[in-house]
Image (cartoon, rainbow, N blue to C red):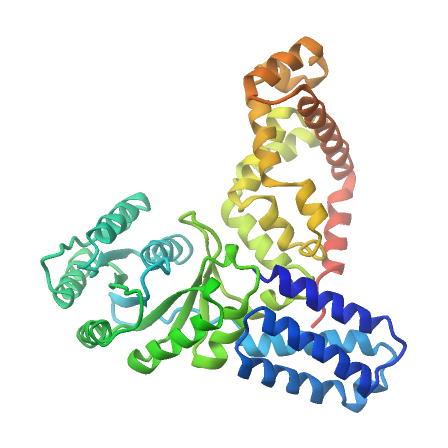
Length: 448
């Protein structure tokens, strides 16, 4: 998300930071480019106008104009305004209610609502230790009922069954009764979507809302619809009084207009963003971290949190002990590292969160996720002895491995070269290089 906006904003601001001093003329010129970048990102016009005016007023202040580093101060002003537009801080779910707390999911058809209901259940179960029950009140799409049932079972959540011949309000009430019997902490109710907003749909969801009295009413919307997402969210908010928004499909949205428009237009916070199709691809929305990503500062905090949740800590300790004892970093270890990276969304997801890397298409191309999948296939085609002792891999071995993995001999050579580079890096980390690397990463963190 935000790739095109981030690239344009960074280029525009970089041009200004190279100048000795700021003037009203060059600030105005820069803000005009920022305005174009925001509009191209499909940010709603009222939001753009307000953003530009707020930045302009602060940028023309005496402190900025007389600063020794006015360009750096301008970056800070833009950063602060981005955070302000998106909501200052993460708005967590409010589940402070006598169990079961009811969470109602609303949205248009095709927004990813059903999958998001299961993703949210997984987050609550794994990160908040909640016992969650799911149910589907979408009687118009039997496939949606079956989909949620399958997803619930896949994450070991409780599930209250429903069918197309039932009343949606009855389904919701049955789910709450079942949750009480099962001592569930949270009930997540998936509702029917439509291709567009209509009175019948609104009447139905209002009836469910009135009968269940949810503590959270979350609007799920496709981020790729841009400012239309914000306008649709406003229509739902006017009818239901939403408590928050979940933006889906942000991994396919290079513009980011929805994220920058939704809160301003609805007055409701973005609570989560969907960052992929996998069941664990739902992240809490942190405006400050997103602003850092947009301005090329990276998002080390989210990266560390994600690593802690998804990476096998025992595997990490095993490799660390092995290297500390002086044993080599073999190809089996290398394959394990590739698998751990894929758990975190692949190399493109990691690069987006590293300072200065989000706007480096060349780097992303060189470390393409398909390349990593190919490398893993090559290692899997090796014998156990070849993985442990790569030095024995010669011409005949390479031809056999290439044939078994559907690759070419030059691919084998590239893999062995990358492995040697990894070995050299691991040797450096053994001698205190890890602490030095962490200090460098801290130095790259945005100062606020």
